[in-house]
Length: 120
Image (cartoon, rainbow, N blue to C red):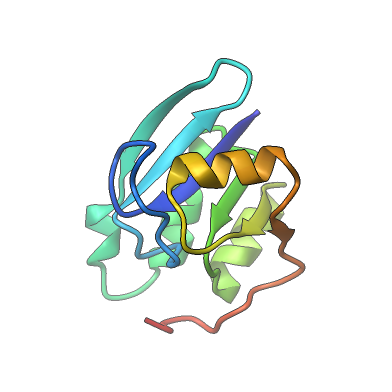
């Protein structure tokens, strides 16, 4: 299973970014192979609107079945949910620490969006 994490850098030591659509990068981590790749989100980050939907489409296209982020808006939540992607919330740690917390079942699964669009 692949998981996508919103983050401020492109390594496993990067801090998790609490924003979903406007995060600078996504790390796509393959739990079976213990490998990862980075998706640059800079172009979407600077778009005037629709960042959540575009970022969600890129995450879905990467093959991720789970997203881990700090917050998610309504349009991104609907896009990810329609594609069958589960969303989990995490805060204040690195990508590596967040992956370990996910493996240990310490993260909360989203039951809906927790912020309105354009909250940052």
